[in-house]
Every structure is written in structure tokens, then in C-alpha cells.
Length: 323
Length: 277
Image (tube, rainbow over all chains, first blue to last red):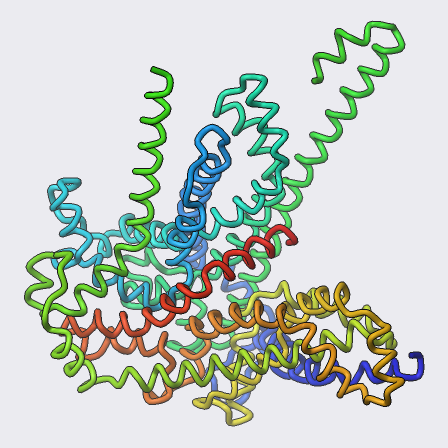
């Protein structure tokens, strides 16, 4: 075996050659561009930290930052809410809802479809006058006047959020259900016997035990959400219309690079976006972790109290409190 | 009384679930219906009954944009990407799982760290690199980077470590098989189920990729479907809503049909992946 060990290099060599050329090198080259003024031809001109100074005072970048968060935030709240509600329904022993496989598949379908096709589809269906969505909502009497979805800043951001929710609630539901199926049935049976109602079961059993998997959903959704591009690019004119409401960070990056040929500045946007992603992922991770640690500490404290009580000889009173 | 209430609750839940299922599916249904209708009818209002203009819409769309060319391009790119990513990831995973060479752990951790870096970070550099190499407006920048797919390598290495028994390798070596042959005849077949799982996601990811082909491909005849969709919207075809709907439908329906066959497989994979992750 030992004499063959060096052969491992041959097996991993193709991967690392391509990885270095098409992955690592572009990332480093982009970093170099952040210190330059470069319009795509000639030699990049070294300008020190000017791009960084610019991005910190760039109102368009700030706008893109805020828009991205607004759109992602509304979408995430809705998507998680719907998925949790569905997970609670399907995990409820009293209902015994059938057809989990069917509903899972149908709810997940929009997630699989090419986003650019979805974007074009919605750009015509959300049309103010001729769009099927307004026609439908008016026919069933939900609205009296057509809504100008893609022409008002608020409605257009809400549209993107709703489309994202529509695309992702099924995925989140599948992931949460995977978490639910990992929770021992005994907890639910015990809750049933103890006479806990649905809301109690949900808040005291399902929700706390789903926390790790919700962290996974939150982080992956956040990372994906900060890179929002296809929908805002194709729903309106690709410049962030109406009124800059759909100007997201990656759309701004794309336009700076490939529409206005500001490669140096676009590279800086890419690195800012990376920094923001890392910082917010770390904050999310840490706050969830600290909470979990806090709970553990509280449990330890309880145990210590019980032990102390045992020593004093009144186990029953204290013991019951914990159970 | 109690039982009646329970039945009512249950009925309400099923109604709610059905409504959600309809909401999930109805945009696609309307897309298919509208693809068979005339523009002036679509403007007048919606209906759930198919129209009669499918052939007209198709002819009109094809007179401006050849959607099957986009389809072919997407297919070429996605199939090649899937094969390259599957084969080379298996190769790399085998290297990491079987041999104890110097620097192995460092390289593996380095790969995992780079996995966290979002794709857009190197986009500008990637574009400039391909410009310098003369690869712009070719499929090379869309295909070749698939040889290095860290996540697939990670997944396959975990799989291989738990399924490949060292005694199998020893037996093959005693029989005089070379290392590459051992990989092809023993390890690769063992990894096949895991490769297949990853392939579905690689294929879908490549098929749906928008920003990369948008940046590196310029000639309309080389557009992949997602880029062609954007092109369609800005072209003459958009004047005819029925044709536009039909174009979108052609890009969407194949994935829907594939999902019919693979849905159980895909959903199980998502569930398994998230619990481990």
C-alpha cells in the first residue's frame, strides 16, 4: 500500500489543475482588479483603495444592498412560515393527512424550473392590463382594479418576493419534513397522552427540535438570496426598474461590469458581496449557536438544582418540576 | 359532535393543501393554455380551455427564433458537464479515499473552504481569463470548469469511504490490476448510485444556469435556453403573446416531464442531503 500512495496525486491532479485555473486564479485576479481602474481593454490602471472608498459612499450600492435584503427578508419569512405550517400539519398524529408524497412533489415543482423561464413567464403574467394574474384576481373578485405589479417600487419588490416564495416554500417544506421525520414519534405520543394541544405540541416539541435544520435552511437561503439576479434582471428592463426598486447587488455588479465596462469597480462589488455574505452567515451561526448553548446552560442549572434538592431529601417536588 | 368537528378540520386542511397545490401548478397550466391561443384572445381574458392557434404560434416563433437550436446547445452543455463532473469527481474522490499521500488533508480542507465561496466572486476574473485564452463565445468556459466540482467530490468521497472495502483493492492488486483499472472496474461501479444522484442535480443546475452563459456567449445561435428566453422577450416574438408563451413552454416542459419520472428520487436526495448537512 505505502509504495502506491504517491499515485493518489495522479487521481486528484486533473481536478486541481482545472480548479486552480478556472476557480482560484479568477478569484485572485478579481481581487487584483479591485485595486485598479479597468475598462476591459489596455492595462488595468492601479488606483489603490479608490474603489473601496467609492463603494462605501455609493448610494446605488446601498440601494442594491437594502433592496436585496427587503426582497429576501419578505420571501424568507413567508416561505418559512408556510413550510413550518405545512410541516406541523403533516406531523400531527391526530390528523393523519394522506398524500404527503403527492403534495411534496407538486409544491416542489416550481423550484426545478429554469428561473429565467419563470421570470419571463411572470413578466407577461404580471402585465398590468393583459396579464393573466390581474385578469384572474379580478374575475374571482379579489381585486376591483388591476394592480400595476411591475411599475410601482413596492409592488415590484413584493412581486419578486412572492415569486421567490412560490419557488422555494416546497423545497423548505421537504427539508423541514426531513427534520420532522428525525424526531422520535415517542415525543408526540407522550404529548398526546399528556393532553397537550396542537399549538403546544408545535411550540414545545416540533419547533425546538427543528432548530438545527432551520439554521441550515436560513444560511443556504441567505447565501442564495444575497446573489439574487435572474428574476430582477428579466422581470423588468434589467436596470433595476421601476425606480431602482429591483436593483440588487449582483444585478448592479453585472451592469457595472458588462454594461458600463467598469471591471475594477464591479470586482469591488463582488468582494463586498462576499464580505457581507461571510459576516451575516457568521452572525446567524453564532447567534443560533449561543442560543443553543444558553439552553444547555439552563438545563445544567436545573440539573444542579435537582441534585442539591436530592441531597436535602425532597427529590419529588423538584424532580416533577423538570419533567 | 367531536368527531364531526374533526372531520370538518380535516376537510379544511385538504382544501387548503389543494389550493396550495393549484397555486404551485397554475402558472404552468396557464402557460400551456396560452401557448395555444391567439394574442388578441389572451389580451381579452384568460380561460382554462386550450385554443386552436398552437401551430400558428409555433410557425411565428420559429420564423424569428429557432428555439430548438437553444435546446440543442443546452443539451450539449448540460450533458457534457454532467459526464465530466461525474467522472472526474469520482476520480478525485477515489484519490482522496484510497491513498495516503503527503498534504492530502490540507488539500481536502482547502477544497472544502473554497466550496463556501459564492460563484459570483470570481466572475470578472473568469471573464477576463477566458478572454485572454480566446474561449469567449465558445462552450469551453461553460463545460471545462465542471471537471472541478468540490461538492460532488466531497459527497462521493464520503460515500466511497463507507462502501469501499480495502480488501477488495488488495485482491485486485494481487491479481495484477493497475490502479486506474481498479478505479474503472471496482470503485466506479460501486460509486455509481451516488454519481447518479449527484448527476441529476448537476444536470439541472447546468440546464438552469443563466448568468454564466449570459456573460460568455455572444452569438444568438450559441445561446443556451435560459439566455435565449431573455433574448425572446426582447425580440419580435414578444409582439405575439401566444408565441412567447409557447417558447417558454418548450423550455419548461422537458424538465417537468423529467420530474414526473425522477420526483421521488430527487426529493429523497434533498431530504437525505439536508439531514446530513
